[in-house]
Image 1 (cartoon, rainbow, N blue to C red):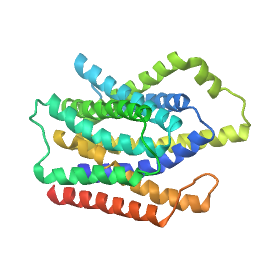
Image 2: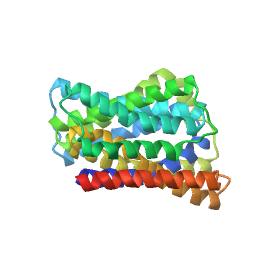
Image 3: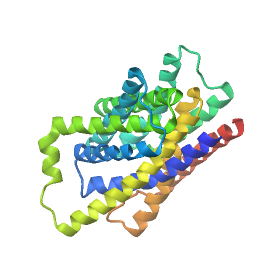
Length: 306
């Protein structure tokens, strides 16, 4: 039960972070490459946890697995943000949100040789959480294209592999030691982006802006990343606590984040319509309410079965 509470708490925090990410990406930091570079670079601060935790140097394979987990997550985020940049969110978000838990489930089943699988009584909860997440973010007016599906598949596979490999890290290492190694992988991935797109990223970082606007953006970004770090720690803690077969549920529970994000977006669209726009109609409200009820039903079934 503790892993479920940690996951839900993480997604409530990450909903606020996502809303601020949206504001930054449509305004002060429009380039997905630059934004990913900023996020990845900040992961280096995880090294300050070394003297405060029981940090150890594990075997070569565990180091590789942890670094790969962190790097895969950054690469997955890049493709996710690239999809948001090229296509409407209603094409990318439900596709990635629905595919990540499915791929996580499949990867765990394959890597464990079929020995790890969720109980049949929990499978309904899994289906409801995934279906609710897709329905909550789906817009019927937007049709899928092969290009958007391809980007969604790449993002989903990378993010799912990151979550599953993180679980295998936490099975062998203490939480904080594994967490630090994973964040080191994220930092190295950001350096890879700097190597590939250095001119573009540095031009964005050092371009001339009004000092006040730059200072405001920096403060908002750092506060948002601080909140995101807290949510990410809770998310990783949930991965460490959850049984191996139930890691896919942590992905499926992202519907809680979508639901809370919807509430926040509607609130801010009424208060700040220039920055946040949310189409509201009876049909859309009905769809969203049904989706939230489906997610709530899946969450209730899961909680009762634990």
